[in-house]
Length: 381
Ligand SMILES: Cc1cc2nc3c(=O)[nH]c(=O)nc-3n(C[C@H](O)[C@H](O)[C@H](O)COP(=O)(O)OP(=O)(O)OC[C@H]3O[C@@H](n4cnc5c(N)ncnc54)[C@H](O)[C@@H]3O)c2cc1C
Image 1: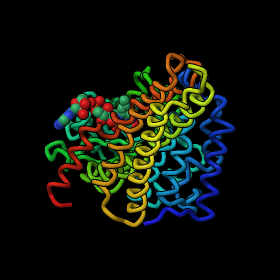
Image 2 (image 1 turned 180 degrees about the vertical axis):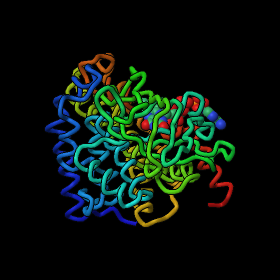
Image 3 (image 1 turned 120 degrees about the vertical axis):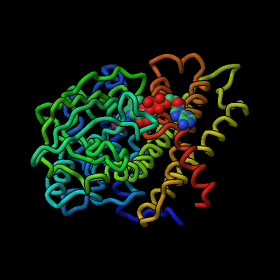
């Protein structure tokens, strides 16, 4: 396995890097403070092709491979983890629609998703977090429609302004439990679908996360993704890819925090010399860089193998587990290197530290990743 990039891959990653540096870096702090994306930003992200990057060209996307997608998310997360979240979740919905959608669904949602439509993925409910199988939202067949009732919580990419459609996991046959769950695409404008509480979060403040409330929400049965009863499988397979996105976000946040630490430790003088002249801090930097490179390799390995059609359940869980815990560890060390100044909002590390903290929590907590990894290890996979 080698991650020597082609000219095309390098061009796309460079595009993301310069977008992050020129367009996101100047506004990242303000968006964090305002707890929302700057006006028009989501459309800009779509216009440069990042929302549709994993959509095949025949549906208007860039058709990039999994490794390129991971590296793009890293570049964005290095500068602004909220925008990386927007892209990671949206590209997860693209992926699920590509793998499971009918031709009509692909024509509608992939074209829309490549040009500015924002997708969300809704599995979690108030009583079904790590135990996603406990989800209770129901979609009851009524003629040619489903009637949906239930509440989803903590749903990314859905907020007061953002979010156009959601891949909803709901019970179409409650007696069969997970085998009775189905994946249904619901447009935001559908009567009976409301955005409930918009969460006020510790980090990723610009990225919207909301409660979704479905009350007698009528959706045509043509909105079903794949077959009835396959929703849980679709969600779990989608999350394998999603976890690579989250691992990429963790790697990017860690890389950004290393850059912050290097810049600060060069210019901060104590005891008559820059603080980075102290071997104690140099060793922090060595550990931060080494662990982050390891997280990156785990992530790219999972991405590359997914691209080649392998079952990457264990590898994606390893990448997500390691890269997310590393993001928390590295941002903490970087903050330490900043001393008291790192605790102030004047320095990017204060935001990077808060942003990192979500990564071991969502798309499966670290404990859940360890359940997935240990199950595979025990079963000799
Ligand atoms: C900012 C944000 C964005 C999110 N975006 C989305 C989204 O877009 N779509 C979506 O569907 N969900 C989303 N989520 C939900 C997220 O995936 C869940 O929060 C997560 O799966 C954990 O569920 P929980 O919060 O209910 O915690 P719980 O499941 O209640 O877990 C609490 C603690 O108990 C531990 N625990 C639970 N069970 C076990 C066990 N068997 N063994 C060991 N430890 C265990 C957990 O690891 C955790 O430490 C988001 C959450 C947040 C905070």
